[in-house]
Amino acid sequence: MKVHRTAAPRPPRVRTTSIAAFVVLAALIPTTASATGPQEIEAELPYVCALPSGQQPATVRISADFPQRADKGEAFTPDGVTTTVELPEAAVADLVARDAAEVRPATRLAVGVAQNEATATATWRGSAEPAALPASGPLTLTTTGDVPSVAGQSDGDLTFTAGALALDLALGAADPAATGPGSLTVDCVLAEDAPKEGLLATVPVGAQTPGASASPSPSGPAGTPSAPADEAPERQGDRSPKLVEPAPGTAPDRDDVPPCRYDEQHPPTDVSLNAYVTGYANVKKLKGAAYLPPSCVLIEQGLPEMGPPDPEYLIFDTLSWANFHYQERKQTPPFKATFLSFDFAPVTATMVLEQTDVIRIDSRMKMSMIDFTTVTDTYVRAPVVLHVLDLEVNGTPLDVGPECRTETSLVSEDPDPQTFPGDHLVLYGRGEQILGEPATGYLLLSGGVLSGKATIPAFTGCGNGVEDLDRLLTASVSGPDNYIKQVQGQTCAIAAPVFPSPTNEGQCTEDLQPYEIPAAER
Figure 1 (tube, rainbow, N blue to C red):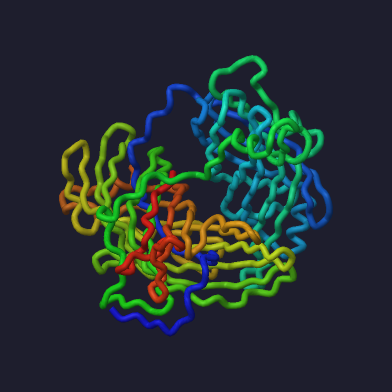
Figure 2 (figure 1 turned 45 degrees about the vertical axis):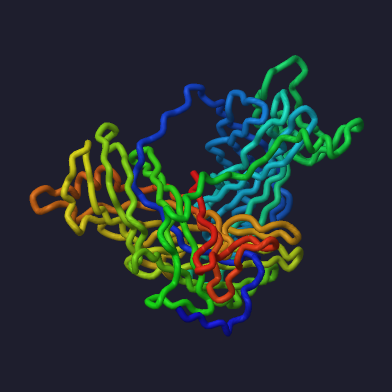
């Protein structure tokens, strides 16, 4: 295998762009719900937001499911977190003045977590598909996303209080041919008259005793408390609620994943990367989720080019390309899933995702001219069909034939359909880098999570000439609004590999495969 090494050394692990990764769309049997129901909270809170036109009132509605109680040290994750922000009509006028016709929102809500005067701050992040600006009236934006797990370190009530909210708005132009209107970050603070000072939920932890409950301190923003006067800061930190970012499951062993390396048929270049990807997808029609085991992706990373001028940001655009790689074919490894068809018939299918064309990766990095914070928005466009290899219904094999697949690629709503026509899957990810802090989110070099929604098309070619199984699969699986969440691992740069050492995290194995095998996250 020949590698050209004339390129500049690989830059440090500052994350800049994105990569494709995909999940299978077949449904597993839904898991059984817990016998103890959660406490469902729905809070409506007043906020004040700093818009270009000035300070404006806003309404923020937060919904989530919390456990009824938890044991000391037991980590739990608020479920079904949704943040809805209603901005006044003046906000719409501000966006229209920037020549925007639609907006893709991302929210960052600071949530103060307190227990017995010890405090911590969690960030609840959410994102959503683009929304058109209304012709009149307020602008309502609803985001969903994963949030950190929390564990109380002692007995006593664990409280959650809403704090500052940042609303990142990626703006879309009314005229696709025009220069994009850029983006806008709207900072919002909890209004002084907020009910219960923004208290969202209380979860009893451990053995409850009179006086064990504690409320967040009313002084200062949520999540920025000070230690009690008679307690050393380091002692208070030991008792603070423990926050854990959303954790993946267990990664497979290397022996259980396919090889991921370049070869003579696929020689690497100076900009070649490889990585494993894995994930889950919901099948809305069957109320279940499906798992795609780690798959190899080979990537050709593009060179950054100057983006459109913006008075507030320095912008760079990067176009990269990628392909699945399995036994010299552009597809995932075969995978098997069992699901319930029509809620009663167990169906087991063996499938692969096959490319019909190259995967396109568009990334835009924006660096603030004020504080040098960088934000990278990435869109992955992948034309992939779902090919069914084998099918069993209630244990009885059905002959689906060699050409059983979806009629077209999996289809997502593209934010720029005129520039990118045709049927393809679209996944979106955002990475952030605040000066002096670790990068978060999804970026090409270090990986992360991308997500989106897709329509599963109707099936065709399913049968042996005697039985037509197209309608069975179409009725069972096909349909819109299937949420996808997938994880890419750290990439390996073939021309400048980083091997594990006492001073470096491993990025490549000795034979130039990705060192990291990611675990899927629900």
